[in-house]
Image (cartoon, rainbow over all chains, first blue to last red; front, side):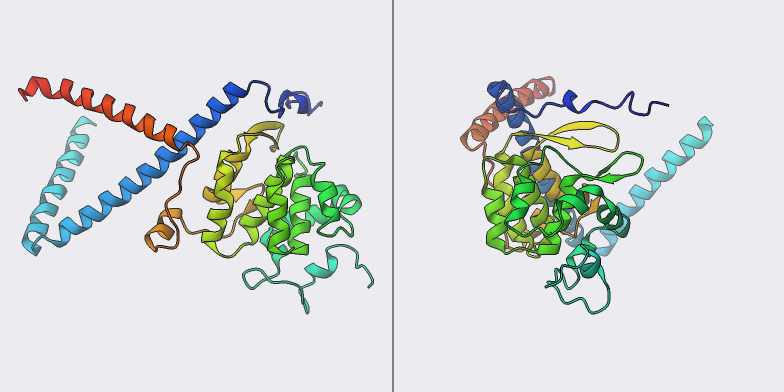
Length: 86
Length: 221
């Protein structure tokens, strides 16, 4: 009946700053690094996508088709393999 | 001027004449269910009645946690109520920036940041105004549905810029930073880590360079 029993009491979370300045600074640095890394990955990702589009554009229609065929065949083989396992 | 019973008047669909944000009544930035819970709440009725941009400060400096709604009844937090009040008041940009710049009151800063993300219509301004506070590492107490959690000013800012939902509210659409950079409407962000970041990068390069050598050896390179 006591719904509040397993709820964290308010004072379990302490928002006092400057208790351990070095640790707090280190924790922030880690968070900021993760953000920087995340943003860089996003840029790389976008760059890759752009290159891929560029690459495909520079191919002739036949080349594109040939590449697609290899991809589709590989996919099919994959699926058949799975079927046999089952 | 007769003070209409709270948000009733500004929420009245008929003949709304107040300030507009994105062409609509700013109060509608909160979902109907949340609006109703705010207007029904004790904090709203007792502490938010008749506030203006100056007296709202008295309430905002008393904030001790952020959050949206909590508990089985989904009660709104004072933080959410004050944000709602700000949407009703739509104070001038200078006033909001003044709130944001107050070093002493981290919850006031969080409130101003939340409002800016909700109300400002120029995406580039939202980024350039909020991002400097990604270096504010102070702790924030956050009321969650059941219980409490710890977050930080920088994390909260990051959430505002990245997430779709923050504090029981669906945030208005914000173009991704990369998109604005591509359009030349925004310069790349400079991390407050500054030179430290460069040093770390150099370490990384050295690490990956030595990794590469080890991998290439078996191939006879």
